[in-house]
Structures are given as structure tokens and as C-alpha cells.
Length: 566
Image (cartoon, rainbow, N blue to C red; front, side):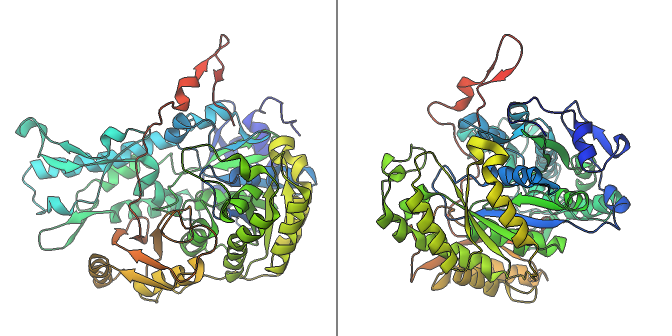
């Protein structure tokens, strides 16, 4: 086993831990390899390992360390003899360049080589960007060449995407400069993580590479880019762009095999936005990991109200898999924030008061954690709480969290000191998680396919958020009816709201009561296979801060990347 400061092992050594040979992997350099879905055929007779998903309470703006917890947990379980891999989303380059540190763990619980991974090591996101923008170019070319499909330009729902943050591209005019430059129209750019191409890649399923490619091709063909002037949907297949897009994405379909800083196998694949999509790693990555390990740790975006709900109701609905255990990541600082301590603002350092002992504030804020425990238990899956520990944390406060969590139905509360100590800092959490994952359980979806779309939205809002009722705008009701008329009311729903509150108002902390959830608009993601219900105006392209992290990134005299810290 690697120490936390050891150099990464050659990827062939990591493959050996999964029982794979050199013929089973496609190396891309020394520290990454692609894995073909054909492995699922060769390993079809092997039983799946236990499936563990890490989620969180409602976070502070910097987050509570789900990825660090997931990586630390996987490393800890390997240390105590359980063959474990971690399956994660890939970091978003824009976020890495904006803010110090990436999305691949931190401290001594991170992926390796850390800097290279965060700076687009796999190249997958570049290809997804190309495929997305190819479709956008085909749309503009179709409008220029006579618009044979009678596409209504005002109905266009497809955008171009880029990886870096560029606020100047949020709202633009394209096609200026005369006929040779296209048809003038208003447009926008989104981050590549918001692309439906990214989302549908994560939901591709198949028993081998051929069937997975067929599923990918069908999903890409179903992407709906707009409507005719008479209201008929127009797809990527109608534009004859779906075949070329799929050809570009063929290699991207294969999950990436990487490693943690202790040499634990890590499958890293896709990187969807947690508001407009399921916000999880790919089904194919998880399925390969489950066939090659006794335990697999994965994570969801944000808290149980968003990430876990979508993980189960969207991703698990497609894959047919269901978690054996849920780990909710919490921090004392988040509990005290929900208890009313300090003025917390996105983009600004958290106030010092959040790191001082305050049992009264913690007990008030614990209502938020209790709601997330209740949410996890709605899915009928054993649930634990992991307190991601900071140096200033009080033992008395941690003991109180344990009492509150057990009273709410959690299997227990365990501290994780993986950031400082690597896998050694999460041994008790690892033992408890393995025990919980081996308990008899039968996870369940929150709603059936046949439930009408408005009822699906109401069930999520009332049961997972705790809302009193849902308020649909006339626009939202009309679009839901239109989707039902297309025969797509069986699709799951993906509610886009703030991740900083159980409500649609990010300032409303704790566990609010008697609130309404507004659904102002609806979008169809037919390729990904779900319906997006928008509560808030979700920012799909971030802007650079005054002092972006990229200013610190450079190469040292030996050619090593510096300035990307975890």
C-alpha cells in the first residue's frame, strides 16, 4: 500500500488490484487507463460488490468534504482488508481554475496525480465539448441553409459550452456580419458540466461495449433542440448530427481507471452539474467497479435533497442498482451555520465563530441533519453519519451529534480524519460502513414511472424537502402537459433548486416548515431521459473571481505542476 506521500503507482499495478491483466486495460500514459464495457461480459458471472453512496447535509458554500470522505472511506476499507474502489465524477476545469483546490479530494485523501487529474488529465471533457458544439453548429447551419425542418429560432433550447469560466459568454449575439456568417440570433454559452451530452453519458447502460454504444447512439439521437413553428419536437437525429456526435464520443464512453494517494483503485468518469442533472459518476464506471471489488464507494452532488434523491430516482432507476449503505457527510461548522451562527456568504471565507464550541447552536442546527437522515431512510437503506473533522472540533460537540443522529435512526456517527491522516483517519467509519452494507435491506424508489409528472415533483418536494406544497407557473404547467402529450410522462424528474437550503431560498437555513416550492419553468432532457423542473434561475456559467486560482498555477524548474492544492 502506498503511503500518502508516495509517488503514484503505474496504472498496470492498480489494474492488478482489480484482477485485471494488461490485455484488459487501454493505458493512456503511466497513471491512467480506459476500461472497456466489454469487461462486464467477461465478469458477468461474478457477484456485484456492496454499493456505498456518500451524500451530505445541506452544505456551507465551500462544501462539507463529500469527495474527501468518499476517498478516505475507500482507503480505510482497503487498509482493514476489504477490497474497495472509489467511483467519482471528474473535476470541472473551470472550478479548478477559479478556486484553490480541485474536486478530487483534499489533504491526504485525494486522487493522484492530483494536479494533472484536475487539469483535464483524461481529456474526456474536451470531447464532450466538441460533440455538444457540433450539434450547435449544425443548428445554425440548418437555419442558414433554408430551415427545411421549419425550426422556430425562438424555441431553441441547445447551447454551446466551454470548460473555462467566461461570464462574457453568458448572453451573446451570434451570426453577425452578414449572410456568410450565419443567421443573427440571441444565444448563450454554458459550462460543459451543464451539457446534456455530459449527463446522458453518465446514464448510458449496457452489458458490453456494443450495447453501450447502441444506448449512447439512441440517447444522442433523442436530444431535443427545439420545435417547429407548429410545435413538433426537433431532435439531433432529425438534424442528422447524432451519428457524428456518437463517433466523437466513442472513446469517452469508456471509464477512466486512476488511483488515490494510497494506491486505492479509482474509477473517474463524467462530471455532471448537480442542479440540472443527476450529479454522479457514470453507471458504466460503477458497474465495472462493482464487478471487480467487494465494496464500491461513490458520491452524489450536494445534500440528500438534491444529489441522493437524483442518484436513486434517476441513476438507479436506469441502472437497476441500489445502494447497500448511505453515508451522510456532516461538519460541525455546517451544523452551527444552520443553528444561526455567523453570516455565511458564498465566495467569502466562513466566519471564525463556526469553528468555536457552541452546543446550543449545534443542537438547533442539527434539525437539518435529522432531516437528511430521514430522507435517506425514506429509501429503506442503512444510513450512517460521517463527521468530517477539523482540528478545532470539540469532542463534546461530536458526542452530541452521535446522540442526535442515533435518535433520528442513523446506524451511528463516526469521525473521519482522512484529510489529515489518509485512510488511517477513517478506520472506524470503514468498519461501520462495511457492517451496515452487509445488513439485509431492499432499497426503493420514491415514485413509480406511471405517476404523472406534477405528482412526481410534488412527492420529491413534500417528502424530501419538507415543503407544504408546490406552486406551478402557467408556463410550467403548459410544458408538463406538452411533455405528457409526447408520451414522455414516464420519465423521472430532476428538480433544479439551490443546494444551500432545503427550500428554494438559499438564505433559509436549518429545517424550515410551511414553505412552498415554486416551479417556474420546465425543460425536457430527452437524451438523458428526465424532465428538469426549475425553481430558481440556475447559473450555468460561473464567472472568474477577482483573484482566480489560476494565477497561482505554474510549472517549477523540473516541469512539475504547482499551485493546484487539495
